[in-house]
Image 1 (cartoon, one colour):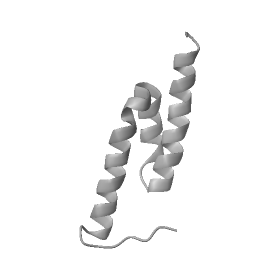
Image 2 (tube, one colour):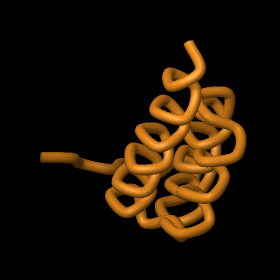
Image 3 (cartoon, one colour):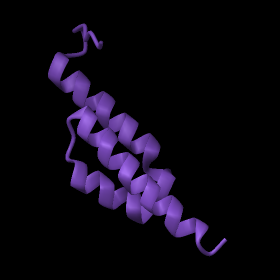
Image 4 (cartoon, one colour):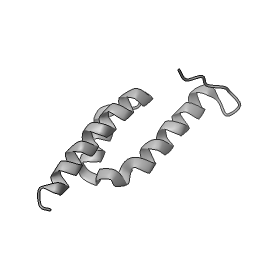
Length: 66
C-alpha cells in the first residue's frame, strides 16, 4: 500500500501531462497538479479543456475532431 500511492501519483502526473499537451493547455502545470493531487484533478482538467475549446471556437461554433 505504501508503494501504491506514489505510483498512482506518478502515473497521474504523466497522464495529465499528455492529456494537457493534447488539449492545448500548459502541460507542466497540469503534470505538477497531477503529482500533488492525483486523480482528484481529473474533473478540473476536463472542465478546463472544455472551457478553452468554447473560448477558441465560441459557444455556437462547431469543432470537428478526427
